Length: 385
Image (cartoon, rainbow, N blue to C red; front, side, top):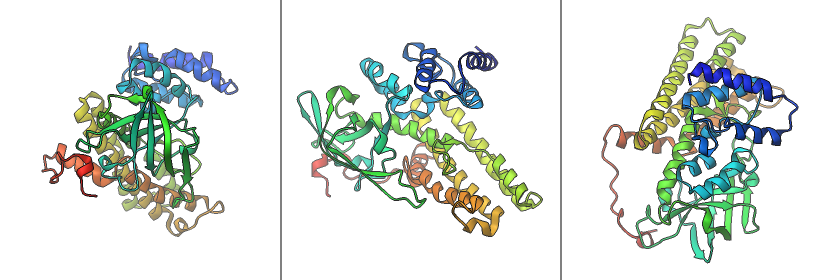
């Protein structure tokens, strides 16, 4: 099926099935049943077997008419990780509610003492019958208060090197022994949370991958997160869902403030537009690459998006001038520029910092020597802490 045929089919389907007043729960089921929620996946796993480019076409057509429900094969880290690493039973049980929007998820990775060195995590999981008992603390968790499941990494074996004793779980969040405390952010919001876990239980059936193989599952999940962050960005307080970054907004802003005739401003806008275009090309390259190369390209994409957001905020500040120092509802332009400037650091830190992405690129692309690892083969319990 060609791209034009896909676009025509999804338009016709939307015209026949979508209306703004439709029941959203019923609509979500209809979208999943038709294969539009995850169109690049195999038909046996709720998809249509389309290419990644065609999946983006589907998302574009849904967005054009204001219809929700598409794009889960790019933006739903929970479902994507299960699709790649879960058992058939887990896929049948956990994916459909997620792509229908009936269940929500969050990421339980970072800890107060394990951020950039995530393999140093100390949250533990101990087997007890058909469950694992979890104890530990996580931090910088977005949407924890509304999540039904947490994508959790925890240590299940303390007698092997740190990367080998980690397992990956889908932890039920709505239980009394999971405490969530919001963190106040520089943007004035509290999207991030601390999560305290004390003797919480997760069914053994919710372990993704084998015991001790959680690090490899985590790399898949991080790859999807970096791809997502390199592809989309949240640029406004009013927009909770990230969206594609485009240079056209800068042109209009410069026109509104009478700066479009400034050659230097035009050059800076063109430079950002070039960065956006090259980042899109690299995303396309990652789709055709093997998993190892794709992970590197996703790191490059995330790093590029971080630079794009910071550069865009800088140019917006230059265009707007003194108004960029104003904030609050009485100063919507200045408030939006301030938000973008501050929120750009989210992409620089979340999903692995810019410095971590540079390490990945330096080692895997440029062939630079790795950092010395004197404790690489030391059991975790014997590491100096």
